[in-house]
Length: 192
Image 1: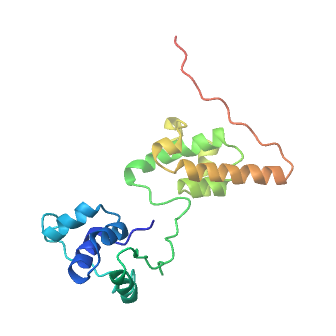
Image 2: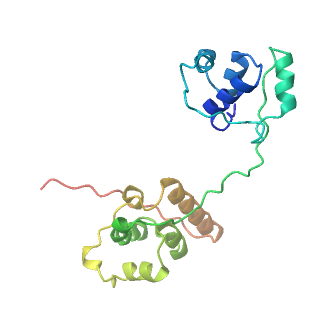
Image 3: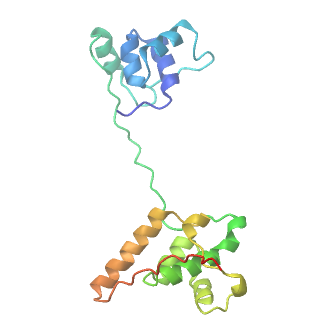
C-alpha cells in the first residue's frame, strides 16, 4: 500500500482535525495504532506540525467524512498527479577525484566488451569518443599508467547500466549476423 507523504505529520493532522479512529489513521499512515495513541497523548511527535493531506491532494474531505461515519471504513489515498521521476541513463557528473580513473574504466570496457560501440562507452563513462580512441590507440597522455579496472567497482557507472549496454550491443551484433564475442576470463595472479 502506498503511504501518504510525511506519514507522522499527516497522522498528527488527522488526530487534531478529524474524528477518525486510531486504527483508521494507523492503517492510512502505515503506523501501529499504539503509535497513533501515543501521538494523541502527546508522548510522541511533540513539535511536529500537522501536514494537511486534503490541501496537498492526498485525501478528499468527502473521503474523511465517509470514514468518520463508518469506523470499519478505510481511508484511500488519492492517486498521485505527479508523473514518476525519470531516471537518467548513462553518464552523470563524475567527481574530480574519480576522473583519473576514467581511462582505466575505458580500457577495461575496450578489452572485455569489444562489442560496445564508442558511443555506448561514452555514455557509460561520461567521456568523449576522442578520449576513447586515445585509450584504444595508447596515445593518451597517461597511457603508461592506465590499468584496466572495472568501472562499476570504480563507481563510474552502475552494473545495471553496463548490463543494459552489453545487451543492446549483443542484440545489434545478432541482428547484423555477427558473432557475439565472449569476454576473456578474469585475470588471476599466479603465485611466483
